[in-house]
Image 1 (tube, rainbow, N blue to C red):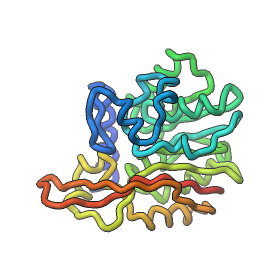
Image 2 (image 1 turned 135 degrees about the vertical axis):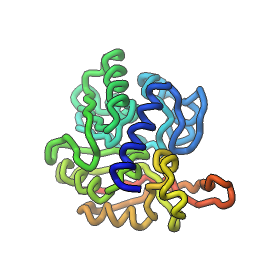
Image 3 (image 1 turned 45 degrees about the horizontal axis):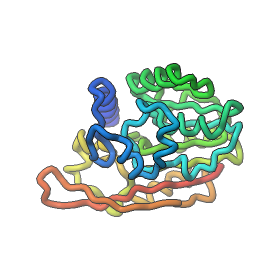
Image 4 (image 1 turned 90 degrees about the horizontal axis):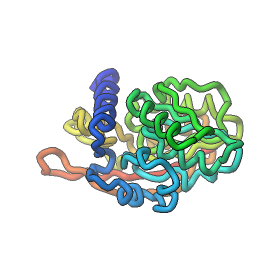
Length: 251
């Protein structure tokens, strides 16, 4: 699929999730209760109950907040912030002296997150409309970058990591959760719009993903969690093995 088409498909799918108040994404788990899915990807019930309920949409593949070692007063940037689950969790950790900025390319998601922040009195968060390949963020302005099952939605992942490096302060760190493959996905999946929107078709090979982080300039790259899962083609005739991983690296 062409890059422009991929972005159109992804934006439309996530806009529909907001409009229909219907959640179904990265793990292909759908349903009315989203707390169990969020807990299954590494979140604790008590921390989920401390943030706006409308920000929990079951769209992640991990919990980068758990690995990010956030400290009071830090400036955090969330790549592909969606309805704001990780932004609000991070805001609680960095406190009033810190700040969390969420960037997302889907206007409906940004509007939903802004509404949640206003309704629940969050003053240390900001949501910006933009693409993670072209971040609307100043150079060397963030202490920490997080992302949750979003980078694999971007056609140009090298550009994403280059942008992350640009906006991160010297000595800063990234903690990203994402999906990667063990082998090459078949073209049937690679060219499937539904598989792109479901955070599968755009997944890179495990080592290729890590190499792109290194090529952007990051050091001390560590895979701090990894869990295997399988996806089937539409005919159910074969299964492909993928991994949910969380990676930490430093500038």
